[in-house]
Length: 242
Image 1 (tube, rainbow, N blue to C red):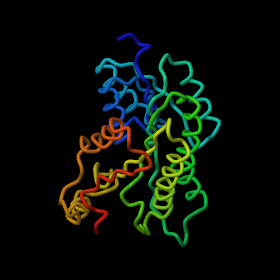
Image 2: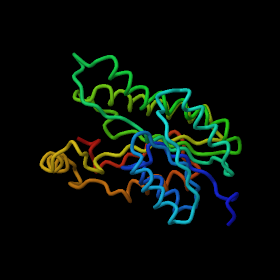
Image 3: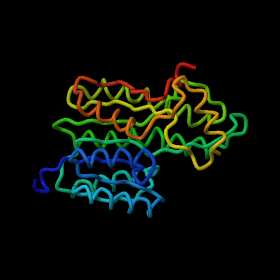
């Protein structure tokens, strides 16, 4: 396979956590990877090395995607690559605690900008590069339908992302499919103690967090099933039932 024959997958927030999982899965499926990161340079370089070892091209791009001008710059870089964009995974996001009574406007705006506005602007740019078809996958959250009072901006942003997924899917059919993946507990946060994590896991009907392979399997399903659009695939151990 010559380099020109690799389809391109653009994954935001791909240096670590679920973004890394998605990037590695797509690389194993034969996609060239455009690997976006913002501050996690060391982790991005490590992830890029793993992808190169798989035998597919990878291009690192550093950008603060909350700045619309940077999104245009990122796609200008994408246009220089010898690959056609086929998949966009909007994985970059921020999850900040806050009290709805005292939440600063700056924190609200920062969360909405990255978690909701950025996927919208990235989709607008991707549309122009997916004339022959493609897939957009937004990374939502199993808590999007809940009332998480400790994370007000995050919860509202993910609920908005689910709605955006529906609107895009209807507007862009039949050429471009748009879906979302909503993980529940998967990777323990650095800000969560083992005791807190176990308490969360014990609440789940299935009593175990999802594995990264199970999250990757959700992306695999969306790639392979071309009759699915406008859907949110929930992988949450039954969290949505409680």
